Image (cartoon, rainbow, N blue to C red; front, side, top):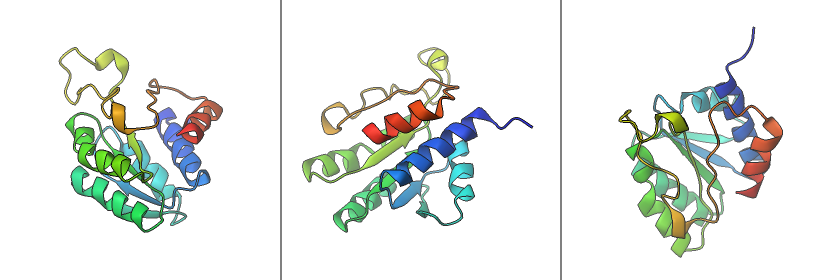
Length: 152
């Protein structure tokens, strides 16, 4: 049976985050980021994981972890969910603390056409981040995905 490419991509991204030193992941559940839930569940406790339903709180929780010396990542679904992270991203930037944000955006072809959860995420945190990458839907090249995560 062929595995779902979205779950494979999520596993690659999560595995690469851990390989890059992420010690804790805060997962904010949503329909777009469900593949990340599967990827995190498959790890069996390899990385600390917290589930948070409020993205703003999740972002600041990650800032607190960074202050304690733990590199953390927050994973959100698309739409306004990712905008809720903006205050924490700004705080981390001003304090020179590392914070990794992974958002599961809508595919390019569903942006700007009236589909739900299509807030423009590209460049959302512009002046507060080291980089931003918009990975196309169906990106199955594990090496490329791992490389993008390593650059973050």
